[in-house]
Length: 179
Image (cartoon, rainbow, N blue to C red; front, side, top):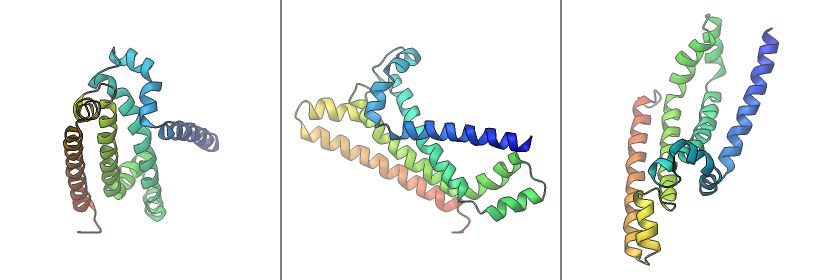
C-alpha cells in the first residue's frame, strides 16, 4: 500500500509541477489577456483593481510554489531522517523541521515574490487596474509627459527598496546562522 501511495503522490507532484511550470512561463501581460473570461466570472469586470487580482494570484502562486519546493529540498536530509527516526509524522516533519529550517529562505522568496507583484501590478495598471502603473502609462507615456512617467517609476522603485529592506531585515533576524 505504501508503494501505491508513493506512486500516486509522485504522479500528483508531476501534474502539479507541470501546472506550475506552465503558468510560470506565461508572461504576465499575456496571462492577463488569457484569463479575461475567468476574471470576468470572478470579479464581474475586466477593468480595475479587482480585475487584476486573479492574474496576480495565478502568476505569483506558481512562482512562489517552485521557490518553496527548492527551499525544502535544501534542508539537510540528515535532519529530516533524524526527526523521522525519533517517530515524527510527516506533518511533524513539515511543521517542526522543514518550515523552521527553511524560514529565512521562505522569507527571502516571499520578498522576491512581493517585488515581482509590485512590477506586475504596475503592468496591470496599463490595462486599467489603476495605481502608479496606470498613472505612468496614461498620464505619462500616452500624454507624452516623461516627468510623470519618471516620477511614477521612482516611486515604484522606492516601494521595491522598502520591501527589499524589510525582507532582508526579517531574513537576518530569523537566520540562525547569523545570530
